[in-house]
Image 1 (cartoon, rainbow, N blue to C red):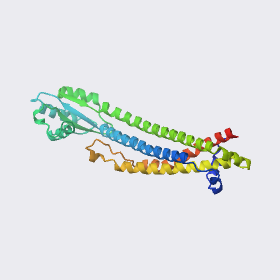
Image 2 (cartoon, rainbow, N blue to C red):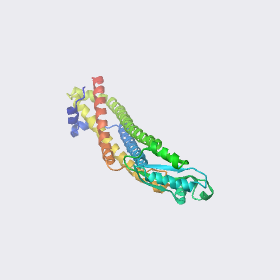
Image 3 (cartoon, one colour):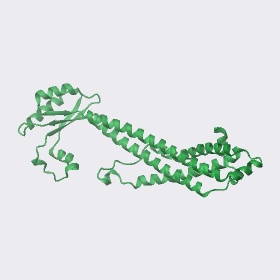
Image 4 (cartoon, rainbow, N blue to C red):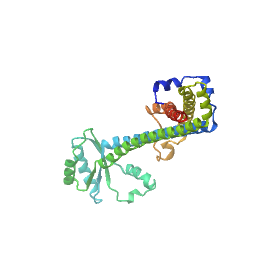
Length: 301
């Protein structure tokens, strides 16, 4: 039996008589429902994880793209003079919007997540940090380093290039991994539904033989299985998707977890993909059952 979308679409039309010819089997029904439920639940989390990680990496990449940091590492008596000299150089450099030396409180806030709020920062020989805001075109980093070497020998420029590129690559890889997970989930769903359909068809081999004796066509017999398994998968996928959405709302936000979580949520266009999970699950089950029915009916012929 060759796959034909037109004939398969006709199988989806409700036919009460055709649905009665095949007795329901509890095992295959539970297997199909559970597989669709579990795979839809995992699909929601795969989408949420890839989108959340991508948003974080993109945000960090954008923030680092138009900012740089200058570190003044000099003897205590020269830090103030070199800081003033570096600020003069930075403020006269094309491509730099603003340059500002961080206060002691701001540097304490930067170190607090790592060392705690009670860090005795006054007693530590910390370098002076200067925050640099750039234009979209940026500045000539090589030329700036040469000027700083002459005016402020203790200045070290970090244009964040070594941090930005890995984040962009990480965002791309996470998206690829997310879609790869979706494809694996789809394949696993198709495999489980195929096994369940094969079991149901084999269990009803005698019923199928009797139907053929009275003149029933294979498409008529297959239609009962296709509709039944597609409906089960659609139902399981809907409940799995709903459970996944509820689980996402139960997870604490980043503000509730001291910043360790990154906002595992779905936003914007991502909800379109979530809404499509149940019908796509039903479609996968439909195609898998159609192929399984065609193969088994040919073997039973």
